[in-house]
Length: 271
Ligand SMILES: Nc1ncnc2c1ncn2[C@@H]1O[C@H](COP(=O)(O)OP(=O)(O)O)[C@@H](O)[C@H]1O
Ligand SMILES: [Mg+2]
Image (cartoon, rainbow, N blue to C red; front, top):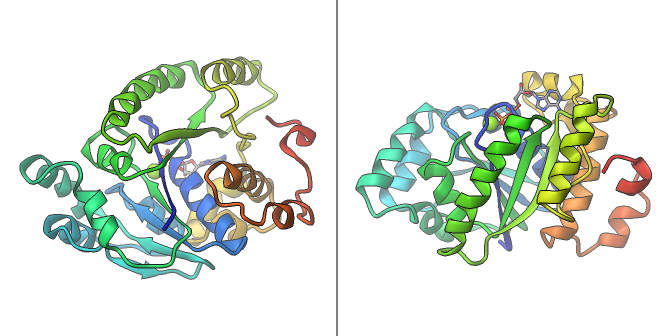
């Protein structure tokens, strides 16, 4: 297990779960083995891959500092650690118990041949998110084009800097503009601000697209629910752009050259 990637933003509804699930599915499609960990008691990542649960197994693993409860999914290359409402109680064990490194200890004990772990975090910088960041090498921040969202980002960068004092492996790898409306002027203003704040780290955009709104209803990631759609194309492109940055692209030539979405981010005009 080489890379541990947390998908984090303080805001809800920006596209964290959609990004975590879609990247897992895209990398699975590209031949990687991915462990998708749902650390949000809402359990949405599980729903998006057709698995629901109470969260009690994950809560138990955290309480006893055991290996995480991994289940297989129908998504090629993707295994899951499912969350659910009972996981909310974990916040208390972290406070009362041995602290916010519990998740890292559980992950270390989890055996499997994954190329990467993707952690879908709750919409806050609570102790579950902190515990994910302490176990991570990469941080991916999905952002929505809004000025309020930018304020939240500043808060997040400050929090990440303080976590880096305890986990020097952690790096902000990318900011992924999600639910984008490039025809709106505010989109370009926000993109300029993002590029100033995160030079070289702003990925190609994910457009607001109905395929992404509808895919969770089928219990499948967009690339399986709507193979040919703007949502699928966008996430495939971002997955290739990110693979290099998170160290997953041993077959970079093979991945990029014959692919159908065919364009570099610049050619697509969407970075
Ligand atoms: N690019 C997009 N276009 C259209 N709908 C989207 C897009 N990204 C996410 N959604 C939808 O918006 C809602 C919130 O997205 P989600 O990924 O769950 O956000 P978060 O995890 O940050 O709360 C979901 O219903 C999802 O299907
Ligand atoms: Mg979510």
